[in-house]
Length: 126
Length: 231
Image (cartoon, rainbow over the protein chains, first blue to last red):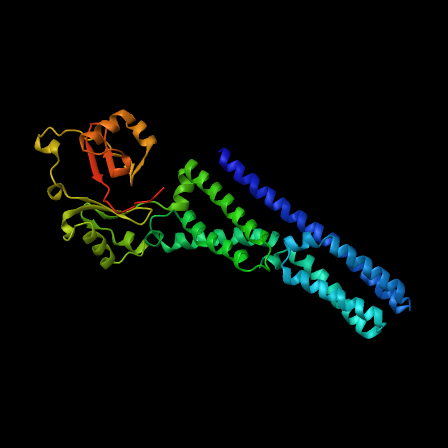
């Protein structure tokens, strides 16, 4: 019966790990999404420098956690986020409001989708 | 990760159910859970191996989940008779007292041609020679012939037969299997003596040496030129 409990414990650890991963990825990306939305508001108010500073911080934050994202999420998805960051930063530098808004919305959506994939939901399972 | 874990559990249960529904003949010699494990695990391992864009974890988590599930099922199968019957099924008596059980055949989706083929494979060309035929849970057909069709045993003939021992492989392709030699209750001195008696200088010259507890020894010398230069 020892082997049964060892296997059950392994399953529980995997389950706990997957739920913790879902929570952690959601927490991380939600914070980034909020700050990117703030940056968009700053840019809308004409504070392009503030928007750029905030976006740079979010990107640094992303890069700090890139190893984690790389380990748990498909690399094509994490690469997509990195490309979206670059596009947003370019439009911020150029102070192109329409392009920036579109690129920023795309980046926020990509971050939300990354966490969404990991959520324990019936929609994801099926 | 969560999705991978839940999907693995669902797919595993689904495939096991599918294999059970397919019937015994499809299972072969593996238990359903082992068959499912072997079907999926290789594929799961190959995906992150071939596609570097997929994290290793997405292969590791489902594999660990499968191994844990298989371990749990195998323990439950050992402990519970009911669970074992649920997972592996029960043997089906296809021929009972010489009469074919057609309902059992239908239940196991076994055709007359397949039954006859199985019987022929075991040397029974005449159905009337069979008293019982049982389709085992591993998909094999066990046959008990009628008393008149069975070869007489030594006991039935009143002959005293000498017991034979279990032959152990002592030397395989020039290598001494020390563990088998010990299990046989012999030592290197005995082996040296046996080899010397057959004109051999060492185990390197032996291809196969079998021995049993009764002292029976079979020796096949290594052919010269074959396997030379091996370490």
